[in-house]
Length: 147
Length: 88
Image (cartoon, rainbow over the protein chains, first blue to last red):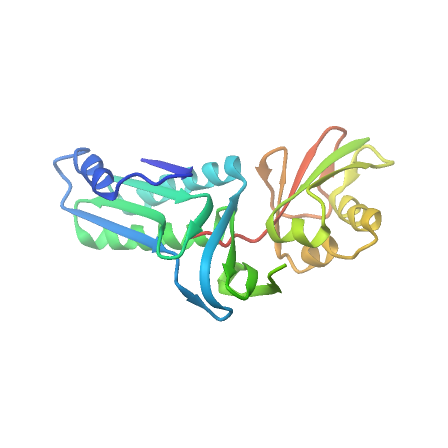
């Protein structure tokens, strides 16, 4: 299991290949890909800018993976999350879960993604053609015209 | 006693500075006193508003805390003031 906050995501097929090698017991691999949406209430999105408290974020991601593995009995999980500027259409985050059966894999994947968004000290600023806004927990926001 | 305070993301934008050193009279000082002193120093009531509504994360010396007015801060402590997460 590992988690990273990174400038550059690994290639997804390499992540899947890596996790598949972990055990012959693996019967399901589930993948979540977060992508920069092209439109927002402010208009056309240009990019998202990610900021993190890297030490706390890393510790919290490790804790989440540890908890989820224990809770659902999955075999392995990987999280990679971008930091810095991410343009529209680009991938933001990969979560890959390997399990014996799909059922616990889906549950684990959902919990990792939900807890990542709720608990990990990472923040995003959405920059659009009309201005920018910090996205707040639950998708709320505070807007400001581009200066 | 002296405390280092660092702000992140939206909160940093609102207060207009990245970090500050806070000279507190008492050693140790309660967390709520530190929060009020930050706003007093900047002549803005921003951090206490986040604090009262529990719309922030606080870490002390790189450990996230469960917010409690009576947590004691000591000379040399580092306090991170962060908005709630919005990653992914």
